[in-house]
Image (cartoon, rainbow, N blue to C red; front, side, top):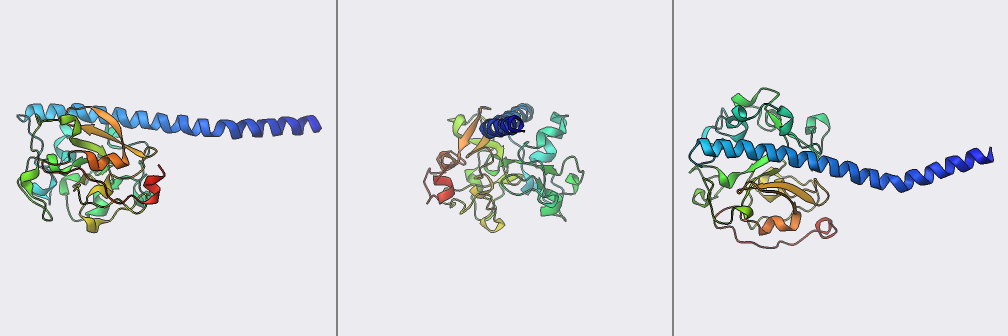
Amino acid sequence: MIELLVVIATIAILMAILSPALRRARESARTVVCQNHLRQWSLCLDMYTSDHDTKFMPGIDEDWPTGRYSWIYTLMPYYNDKTIRLCPKAKRTEAEGGRLPWAAWNVSETNPSDFSLLRDPDFKIGSYGINWWVNDSDISIGGRDAKQKWHSTGQKQPSRIPVFMDCGFMLARPDAADPAPAQDGEFLWSFGGGMRRVCTSRHTGRVNMLFMDWSLRKVRLKELWQLKWHRNFVPGEPVWPDWIEEL
């Protein structure tokens, strides 16, 4: 009996030692899968812009009722594997029990009367979003000047211009004046879809991001305010809440 108790205690100690390493390995594996998904999206976006004279899609605002100009719809001909729409850390919608930053979006839940072309279950759910400022559209939303949009590839310093990333909705419209979220997973529609949709600790204090030169890397949350989201984006540093300071 004593020997059995010693064996059990030894196993318990080993499990306590190995558990953090196993969690790190699992997290690392999910991050790699997420990055592989984004690499496939880079190919889709590269093919689309090549087919459209370097221009990005017009974006959701050009036909809100149908959603036909959104990246969700326009990129459908460029991929077959539907699993690339979901980060492995954010596969469930809120209706399915998912919670930010580990939640997928569902356009039928957030905009039930809109986007008629996106009702197919295979296409209405995702966990990535596009930088609204890259869209080839002259429509302004919420006081955001459409003249600051990029419209096409071939810009200066493309490695600093975010295009596609981990996101709480299908698009984000970051501005330099956006405050940092008070807590991880804070997602307020009233703030117009700014940095809060991106600034979530989905990958241990970082988000996976695809840039205009089609490079991919993990970006620290504080670095989000240093990137070139639109033409006149001035890097800044908001007041950091404790949860970001501790990362």
